Image (cartoon, rainbow over all chains, first blue to last red; front, side, top):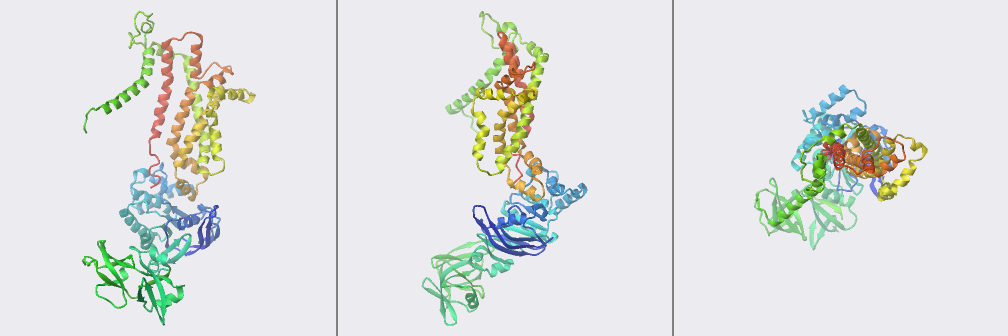
Length: 357
Length: 283
């Protein structure tokens, strides 16, 4: 196992498209890191550069303590699981898993032991003689994983491995992946567009947008301290509520002005504003679960109308119209919240986020 | 399900019956003649030729199946056809693979050039080809190889077109996966791509086999300029008709015998043609 360092990594395609811009990531040995972002954000390109399937246009890629920019994929000590699994359809499950070892001219006895080990680890016992077409989606996915794991890779690269599974199986495999990571302690780089997957699996999350790094941090960091509006909106479900408005300085404190209304901002935001905010146009962000909602008038609250309620079983949400936009607010389940009423929203302590527009 | 006959259904059904009739009728005629006794086809106009022979006989089959000349020619045709398949695949599959996988300028022009020989009627293109085969170094090649080379010329465009389509359906992921695991290009092509492409390539192989087996014009011109006793079957058939008025029983018998290897070959290779063999590769 080894760590991995990306220093100022660039990817510029021959047609001039700048797919990855100046990416710096430091991944520790045994860490589970997710690259997450919407499609076209460069996460898969980054993974393919690490794998050696794409050339690196600029910067340095270090795997362990060796510079890997120009090392052939097979000598990088990586293994990769493709989104499509890329199982060899004419080979049995066992032959698929043993393929890489066979190429490396490992002794037949050891190959068989390794295959058994993988089948056992991935709960595929007795399926070694099957062809991929005779397996279910989840089983194919595990075969693809086993084929990578038997190679004892320094770094394991997973490209959206769960996206072809149905929702139920995806959640099961998520837990399974976590168990395998715990057991093998391998360094894993995981690409996904599903923020929930990234949140549940990773030690750290790398959020990307249009080839640029938005934020690196633990799941709780990116959730609780999003670096910018993009990260705030991308991470979390239902997503964070945003209210656009103007920032006005009032002596020591700040006032947020939106659509003719004013709201006095809590004092803990002062430092954040000094540090991050440029200009007057700002966006306030509050997660649905971070609002207190009241039917009684409250001084210094965001006023709105309750429009509809939605239930997810464990949680209920009420949509509140503020400034001609709907905000989602979490309420107690089965609380039978009155609709078409004026409501007063106040964010919970320290749960207000403010971003540049 | 409701089983009622309405006009529409009757018309559809009639169409099917008619199509089957059109296809099967000549075969029936051939078979009928091949087992006819003499009085069933030489009627001298005194009575119509019967729909079924008076005394069916397999005499003509016995005659040809014990005729060494027929067997010699038949084996030559099989050898030529198999050699043509082998040559077309050997040259065509890698060519098709490059066309399917690599992007380069002038690809469309190249594809057109590959197909160009098939755009000219055989009877025109055979003249330059036969001339080329008269060059000393080609002239002295064994006739099997000469005819097979000529047939390869005809089969190659089809193999390349069919195989290119097949290779394009194979996900690049498979190759990249093999590449990451340390497999070289050639190893990947032989061990991963070819086996996955086999069913599609088999379709191309059948096509080329039939093309070579049936081919007359090129075979005729190339064997005509060589002094050989053994001829490809179509040329041999022609030579039988040349000298005297042919006997319909022997023509019918020979024609049916010539069709047999085609049926056998198709059945052998058919098991590779099961649809959906790439199932399980991706997703």
